[in-house]
Image (cartoon, rainbow over all chains, first blue to last red; front, side, top):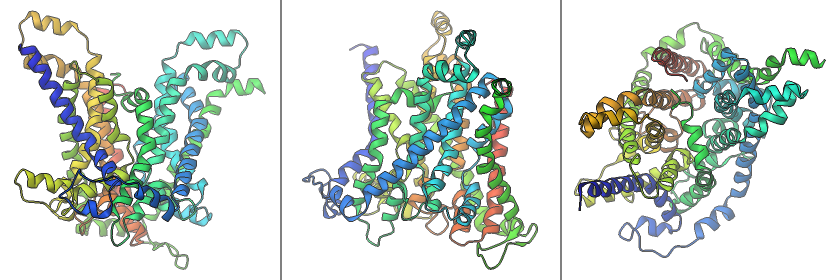
Amino acid sequence: MNEEKKASIFTHLLVYLSLFLFVMPFLWMILASFKTQEQILNTSALLSFTPNFDNYVNVFTQYAFMDFIVNSFIVALGSTLLGLLLGLPAAYAIAKYKQQGMGLLILVARIVPGISFLIPWFIIFSKLEMIDTYTSLILSHMLVTMPFIIWVMIPFFEGLPHELEESARVDGCTTTGAFLRILLPISWPGIITASILAFIFSWNNFMFSLILAGEKTKTLPIAIFNFLSYSEINWGGLMAASVIITLPVLVIALVAQRYIIAGLTGGAVKG
Amino acid sequence: MTNWIERNIKWIYTMPAVLFVGIMMVFPVGYTLWLSFHDWDMSNVSPPLWVGLDNYLTLFQDEVFTQALWLTFYFTIVAVVIETVLGILLALLMNQHIVGKGLVKTLFLLPMVATPVAVGLVWILIYEPNIGIANIFLQAIGIAPQEWLASPEMVMPSLIVIDVWEWTPMIALIVLAGLVSLPKDPYEAAIVDGANRLQTFWNITLPLLKPTIYSAVLLRLIDALKTFDIIYATTQGGPGTSSQTLNIYGYVLGFQYFKIGQASALLMIFFAIVLGLSVLVIAVRKKAGVSM
């Protein structure tokens, strides 16, 4: 065997081994979700067990898990759509008119620690009797989704050819007309990237929902976190719940990996 | 009317977003600053009482605060250094010809997009001293079992492992994207000059990649300072206060002890640290000629 082939086999081994390490917690989560409590507590039989779906059934029958899923979905969808509504025109104007001050403000919104707003939000939303409402949750999550959408879309709009817009203007379009009819339709790769990640960020959000969600609007991360406070941890149920909350994100990641990599690594490679 | 809209279009397009950020971010930060000069327990009966700089002075004499400050930097620096080194190595490996590279890249995405709270719960199970796979593994290779998250000494390293697991792939993917876009010419010249692999990496790849690595590290640094979900979901700052970073201590002070003034003072200090560091970082980047 020649040197090059040996090196290639070695590289493959290393890559697949590290891949295994990074995927292992997910395998562990899925494995445990199909075990009974006894099987989890008995460490002598790690892999030899008969899988059962009881944990999944229990999660839906013993807790209002469907409600939590719906809550998470409403908040994530709402904060993504409203984030797009405010963010897309802003990103476009910042890119087109080189409004660097505005761009900086958005950057600051992405950098500032979210915990700095928690106390005022709690006080203000309490006064307005808006704790435990979709409105307060969506508004808070929008502070994550909107700056992110703008941040992804500014370089995207900057990269579009000027001729497109000029020809639209020659045809008698207003700026808004050109924006809606010409620029947005050709910007869908950027919009998909921004929306997918914005949705995931909101779906995953824990800190804001921790203080603003209540019994009526409890989102999935809060619901599974509350499972921890029971005296004896029901591991199987906990893992089944974790699989359910992670699954949509994993499916999105598998289907749209190209867009996600672009969004997460965007801006960093340009220089 | 149409003319007026056309003339002011750049303000009309940005105003809703700017107003939103103003109401939801600028005003709350101002409010927190105001609260940080007051003593208040969030009750409706007694209003906030002006105490000047007392809350800040109390914090600087508070050992838990000093510890939180130290833990925050310790967590951030150790985690980001490990992530950077491992991330670059992983990117170099991935830059070779790999069978099934697309799928491998996708699977590497999972740790960073998965819900942190769910991920935290899985790690609680992994670290569980009696039934967790971490100790099963240690015993298999003949090392004494550990208490992991339950031990005051081990809790920070254990949390750093989770962070490294979660974010190394991001550094790797960014660096990989950088590697792919490198020019080919310098390498051909190096081969002609008879440079070996290590020399090529050290003298060509690393200098060319510097802006990319720099950007990835900075992004990570700012985010690592603000780590909340993983820590709160797994330890809530415990055992005792041994994993209470600034973020967690601020939350505990505000929403468990209702010491609103003191919590606000802490949050302002934290805010200043994160913002100060970011400004520094952006300034250095500009000087280095890297665009954001």
